[in-house]
Image 1 (tube, helix red, strand yellow):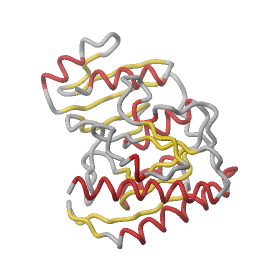
Image 2 (spheres, helix red, strand yellow):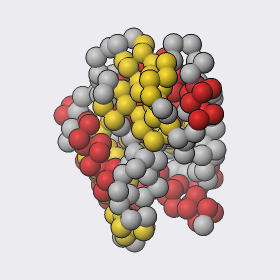
Image 3 (tube, one colour):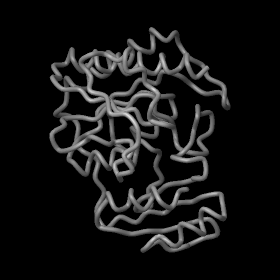
Image 4 (cartoon, helix red, strand yellow):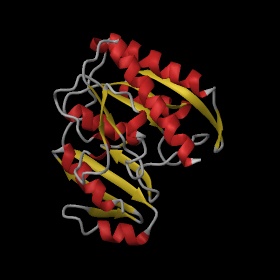
Length: 240
């Protein structure tokens, strides 16, 4: 179903672009950021969007292209963290990661991507995904706007019609950007202590050689830095 869902994903990105434009956004960047990071269909993407495609190898990863000039970040097609019950495509980064925590807070990809946004003082204002993802992000970030466009029963999905989901996204993004002053960037106090739990001995052993990383459990690595981008650089190395 990959070809079908590439189109679905692109149309959901377009719905977010439509909502942002309706709220007055004049520059909109779309970051393709799963798997190969070459999933969206460029010819189908809304012409008002600037597309960031592929992996740079830098520490911003899924947030590549973001800087202090942006007013808001929006997450579309996100998922809950690894091990979340009744969740669709739940995972954290690669399939080898069972948990990612910073300063004792376990978080999904949306959590550490919100911290990257916060590094540039950019707030996350909206997220779309299944109900568990929306719950996890509101617990971390506060009452951001969300669109729970599907619900899990085990690994099965309960979903509305795609056009209904897209309207939820469009309306939610417009509403979020219409109250931009209500949101604050997500920050944690430095120093940042990353604890990564994995499920592959070879990966854990290799990761323990990363400068500053320490093996602190059977399948656990810990790394501390005052710079959050250094945390993400370490994570990109030790997770695979």
